[in-house]
Image (cartoon, one colour):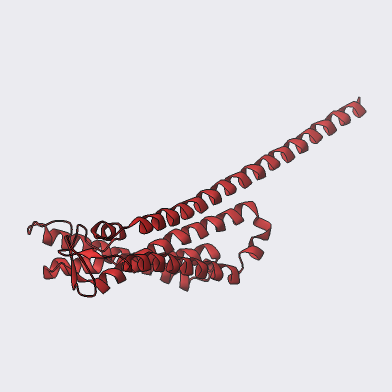
Length: 251
């Protein structure tokens, strides 16, 4: 097909999950109920943590931010899908599509970053319990959340900027219920080598950091456990030796 400048193209077409008209009411009720449960459940978590002074700790602070990020992540795609089902319209403008893709990437990456931060929090609590309050001070965990958000925005900007450079073909149909990066790349008529390299690089760096953190944490826990076992064994040996000396003196 002929490449077309997207400033002249009005809409993409989201094909959704099914064309069967009998399934549309079922899909509408299913996804609406799931969306409401997700939003209300996460809001409940945030309210409980914010109102209970005993839960004002780094772990629950990260959990409340994860709940907020989960609400935003779900809201970036499900409301549009529910509206499309109810109105029988599948069109989405080019700007709206890129906006949806950017929000999806931001909050999806934010979820991953917050889970990594929570893993680091557990690592400090297990391996450095005496220094936990010093290391995980309020300033530090606020900075960790801010850092996670900035990294997520940067990743989304990289992906969106690379997508803006692409030319697309006419009669654009996305075989999904939201604008997802991989499907947009498949519709491009231009060379997507740079985009694929960017996807693989960012994914590789993210996965590498997570694996390295878990391996490092496992090694630290293992070393700590071995050291505790050696110390306990030494104490047991000293206790047995002392008992034998006491018996010799008594005899």
